[in-house]
Image (cartoon, rainbow, N blue to C red; front, side):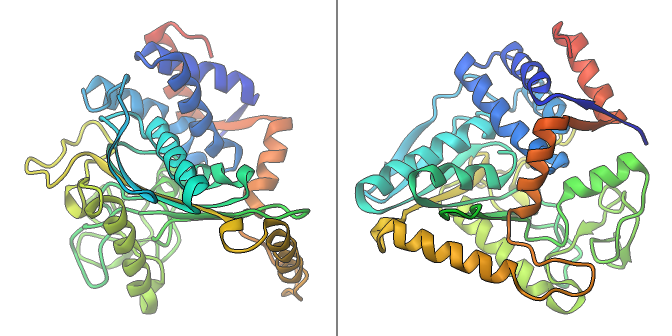
Length: 356
């Protein structure tokens, strides 16, 4: 399957225009675009502009509020619950993290659980926001139920990612961004577009047998928790923690009640909460020790691990290395889009009179 490469700024202008066309205020449209395209820059193609048409369809279905009044509904000096008012998670997420960061500035740490939101893009973007302020960032979100817990035939959890970003000094920052499944659903979507089989261990079919069919989940199967045949209970446990912190704690929908991202599937008729849930944390490094000392030790930690003897033909990576390297390349050379994604964007352009 062929790809077409576009400069970052060209895709940014297009996506920003689409968000404005659905009614987002200028500031929100810019923020949503920055959040969305951070995925394409970092090589997480499944969560970038490929999802733009999905957000538009949710808006058309009345499931996204383009002009949300995002606000705090409950708080203590170090914690808060934020109501996203049905807005784009791409906007709600950064605003909620700002609440966590402000609390961290005041008392050392800030923890925010979010309800009534939608898909927020890549977790890593949100976790990285505190880095510039010498803070450690944490971001989680629950997601559409596509994952079968260990030994289950039912889909009860989402891919439920966890991201943690830690500042360093001379070395690049440590940025962990991972799903709690063996693979994120977006990777199945890419395999479907490319009409390629998926690796063993990513999914099971409707009968619970392992499958390499990229359409297995569409056909009644499920994604599998991180850990594979002998360790999936660990991924299941991590995904459960994300669901509880993001939704049970905030009052969002959890487990099988989380609303689907695709507009052609209706949310559960008996919701247990409001919208999707997220969880954010910000920790001021100097609430623990002087930031300069900590970052110097982080440099030493990173260089020690990166210098480890590696297996032939390989190198030891630090979480965040591949994404950072990809971003540097794509800022110079552009962002490649698969043909099906390009066709979706062209259809959006025609719908809203926006030129790609």
